[in-house]
Amino acid sequence: MRCTRYSILTAGALLCAFAAGYAQAGSVSISLDKKASLASDRITLTVIGSYSCSPVEVINPQTDFTSVSIQVRQASGRSITTGGGFLYTTNGDLVCDDTTRTFQSVVSADQQPWHGGQAYAVGTIESQSCPTFFCDHSSARTQSQIQISGGGK
Image (cartoon, rainbow, N blue to C red):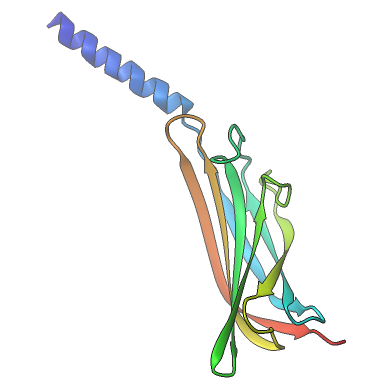
């Protein structure tokens, strides 16, 4: 009986130790502006939006980070132009301090140029913290129609 109690107490102590070292990635949010600016080369466009994220203690940049990804798709004749842009806390693009901040992401077209008009955009923010054996992950996503304008020479 004494051995069983000791095992239960040891298991409980280990569980508490793991739970105490388990940190949460916190809250995240993202939104996109309804307008995007097309560069004169028509290969890149700038998508603007806002985000907020809780601070993440970076012990290991490979596992502790916050990132924003922007994906844009636009009909062009009988095909679709697609492109993506990315921002990261690990290289200073994003600041996570529970404050709503503005970002600009440059999105490059894949195989054909962008043109003025409607497009479909998806913005995703992800935050991950792995201070122990456990990782906590938070994410948010938004999608909307955007209007691409500009590109004049």
